[in-house]
Length: 172
Ligand code: FES
Image (cartoon, rainbow, N blue to C red; front, side, top):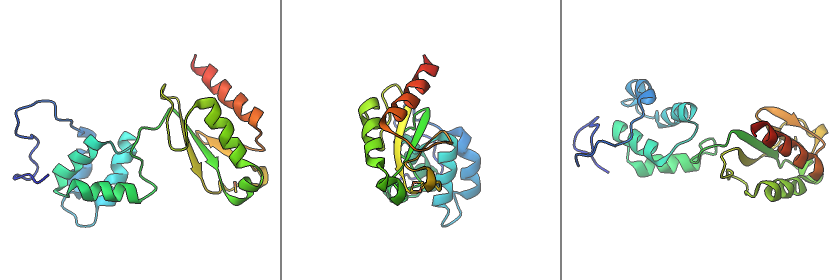
């Protein structure tokens, strides 16, 4: 992964299709030479692109001279970073104590069954991503999930399926 030239935009093999991330260049200009700013760079990159793809991590590595293994290590260590694309609708399912006591695992089962994805995955049509989170801060409504920032409480299996069906129909 070592490149001889700093800020060398080409891999040297003559290919023209090396991915570029121009929207990130201002961030890299500001931070690439600032020690200890890797997390900041990754946060900005995720803000712009939604997630840290392998190509994006390679690009950051080339531009900062930080080994890609280190970037990958940081990206996997911190829960705030995602390395897969997020679906159009992000389902955040609460698995906090109150929600757990009130059946959040049953709710998860219903989602998994209905969408055919597991926690952390995205449906093939790119519509839904499922993520478990800790307390969403509205335990009195448990079990709770949040989709695209909207809170849904006192969930039952049927209720969850109805909500997801409605969202799906909006897309059709
Ligand atoms: S535990 Fe789920 S909202 Fe608090």
